[in-house]
Image 1 (cartoon, one colour):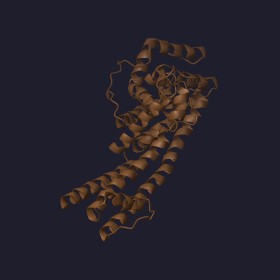
Image 2 (image 1 turned 180 degrees about the horizontal axis):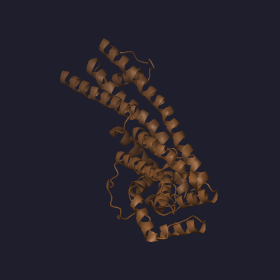
Image 3 (image 1 turned 135 degrees about the vertical axis):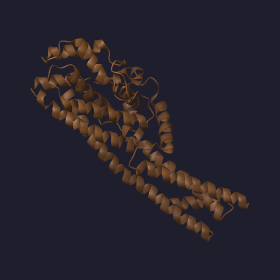
Image 4 (image 1 turned 60 degrees about the vertical axis):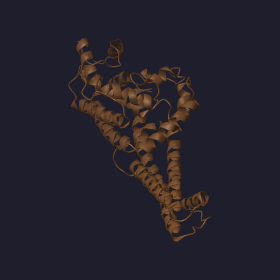
Length: 363
């Protein structure tokens, strides 16, 4: 009997400590450290949401259903933490003061939820109950303090995504963005845009690895997404650096580097493989025909395009290859809306009936 109590105590301590460490790493630790428990909860909830939405659902239905995925999963994560604490402390109470499993569970639940329904029968059980009440309060306080930080970062991210609609349409397009800047004679101000988005990417890399749940928080508008906005701006800068007949803009090139480094760090956190040192001639998901069509669109709008289209294509590939793989992987992970050169070639979009009624408001 003593041996069983010792085993119960060891198991209880392990469960409680593992639960607390999971909460600390998820909420407090300011770095992108994968947490097994959190990942499993998110994967299980994603499977349930996938089952709920069905295989052949349109994009708009997916967007409506998965808008709840991240918020509901965060609440379920709290529930899991509390349940594990209940189990761990029930084992500890068995180890220090009772032979009845049911009494241990009732005592543990009463202490965890601070209900005061059951009073422990021994000093050991009382001390354990005090610590459990504190742990329950700490877990709840952690999540409550976590949410304002999460939504503050979300708000800043989405402000930039919303502002991009003015410049690049919705769903956004790199060619449309460059054309619009040219038409309104604002082309010289593109450098300021690259600078702002470089800062946006720096914050994105830090926040979306420290708070990975942010990646799954969907934009208020169904045709907006942080990952498609990122892809559009990166493609716009890549076209500017490779294809347009204009003086070199170092800010565009710095922004591209900041962008692909940010996307790579997020992809690394989620376990996506990619080539960290791709060759400039490696294949990309954009076809030469799509590139030529974008060039013709720019020429038709009067935007100066380099005469050597072959060299421009090679230069564009050399930029795009740095972020092509991770961009598409993250678009699929977040089930982003079908957007030119990003999520429009995602496997999820292709199997979900295309846009599924998503309005194209490019112009």
